[in-house]
Image 1 (cartoon, rainbow, N blue to C red):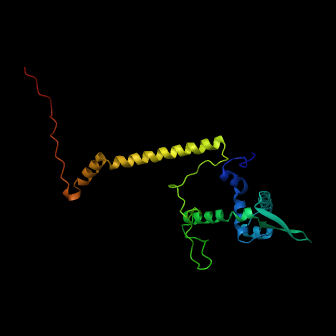
Image 2: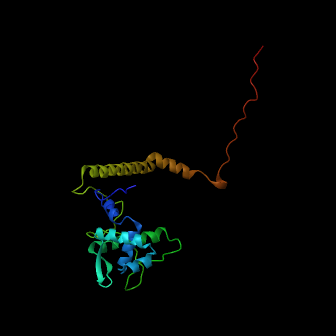
Image 3: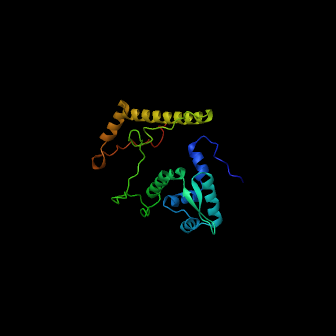
Length: 216
């Protein structure tokens, strides 16, 4: 079955996956960012089949992430050097490393990002370069860009409407809990005695054993 191409989608995430979505590609870029350039170096680091490595390197060269350069004439030998596009992938690798350490390393981190001068581990967050503020889901939103087509605008606007509806419902639920009725209900519940101070429930009168006989 032929794989669907993401290259023509407007979503930048989909277009990125078109170029580096295969896991070997991401690991090759990881090693290239650590200074590896030659075929045998990648093969030893990744323990990958030669034919698979050849295909992945070719794909990354075609995508503009790596540049193939000849470093030896006899016999001809080539190395694979990061381009500016490939070097820009460093932030993605760092983010993946941090996310993996947070969620998939119960035994503790085996690979860490540290300050090269102090050796202190880096606490990674995403910030806005213009304001220095941390980017979180509460204060920021994904919106259509100037080149978005109608389908992209509709998709993002539909998602925004759903978020607004969910936020409104959450606010109304919170307001109901803080209103007079909600506060009275909470106060009554809090005032109810617990444990030894609780009063035993009164016994209900027993039901009559039978019906009253009719007079003759």
